[in-house]
Length: 176
Image: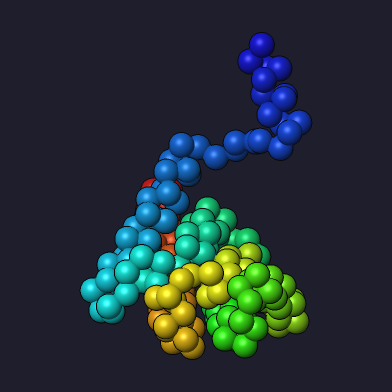
């Protein structure tokens, strides 16, 4: 029975080849990263909620901590993908007026820009969308949305990930 269940998981694409430690450590790193970003945003800005920490940073954190050697969590896609998308999202909101058209165009143009600049970062689409549908607090930020919260969030999350992975590599090297 157990063998059949395992075979079924493999067939549908659910393979768990990582140990419990290999699953818990990235989860702790991701949680710590989000805590630090939110703490810094809360402490040094007047922003709260989705204007202090972008929901797309949750997705970026998943990529940075669970698949650090993948294509998407590299510095260029993380920063350029999110910043381009933030600029496009703000422009679409300010210039197009209609929220349905602005939201659609923001995501579509973000994908196009990220492909052109070779900085595809899936959470970037959410960054663009948040600039359009984020509400009055986000809309009042205007192009500051690109710096605070987008750039600051990316910078802090990336910095925490670099330090976290460095310390983790040092720990693993000593354990050998």
